[in-house]
Amino acid sequence: MNRHSTGILVLVFVLGLFAGAGGGMLLAPHVHHRPSMQDIHRRFVRKMQKRLDLTPQQTQAFDAISTELMHRFEALHQQIQPQVAQIRHEEGAKFRAVLNPEQQKKFDAWVARQEARHHHPPPPPAGH
Image (cartoon, rainbow, N blue to C red):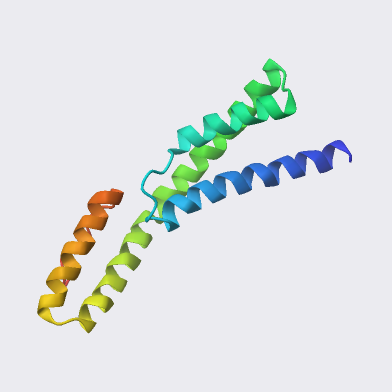
């Protein structure tokens, strides 16, 4: 395998790692404890350092590249977060429309517990 192919393979692996971690944070709110992107970053660099027997210079380069990638994913997350919140709000309104007033109260209480548990910002009040 030539150097260019190896570089592409490593890039795809790293992108998959961060996409999986970042996507998991966005799409798997049922997970109780999600590691932070910083934790994922540190684990990735340590794992690569051990598995690939990286030199200190290579470890530093992996750390810098991984840090840049982490910041890019964080920026993307911040960019799409309002859209995710809007979708959650719209779908919540659709669920509420199916329920009677008593069920709506129970549903709203459940949603509030889920949001508190998963640190989601509360959706706008119903009717907005």
